Image (cartoon, rainbow, N blue to C red; front, side, top):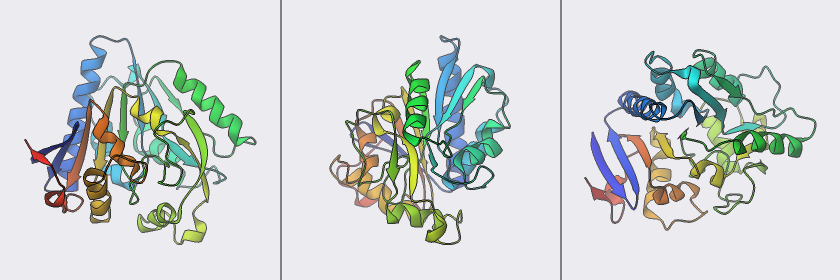
Length: 261
């Protein structure tokens, strides 16, 4: 493992995505236990994407975690996707985590709600009840976090949850990930937690494997901190770690002012 820092963000590079996911799960588990030493319960947000598979498998297998004291959310989902569609993010997380571990509560986004704006308000009210302790996330090929693509990302967004149109790069990523056969099958809109609702968490674990993410990792670290590369905001967070593998971290040596620690 190699460890770097860019601004306030810690970056950890591993030889494989399996090692990356397992290490991130160990550290997330330790953070959960530390928080539960002083709190009766905690609140966590999870991402749904193939990039999270190794992390989710390792975390769900950790029987030392007291899931009964964790309230869980997911960070986005498609609008209009049939309830039984395997590509649904709630379904994805239920199969890999929420349905395998005895969470205190799990709150799902309803992408089939008759009134999408009302659904955004409903989910925002759930988030407002108490601070979020931990976010477990990835970044997209266009450097989005959740479905905050460059065209809709707002570091000062007044909303906690909103409906967004998905840009072509984001939609094509869903095809590249094997979730859909063609871009025409990918929904054009989604409900997403906004950047302030994610960055407001006490701790962030960001897992980013695969060669398709190498440019996104580079741009998020080398660019200025701006909505052009939404994940660049992680560099401002006081307690965030980005986990990469050899493929996604292939361009780390090109990042200016990257400090090896």
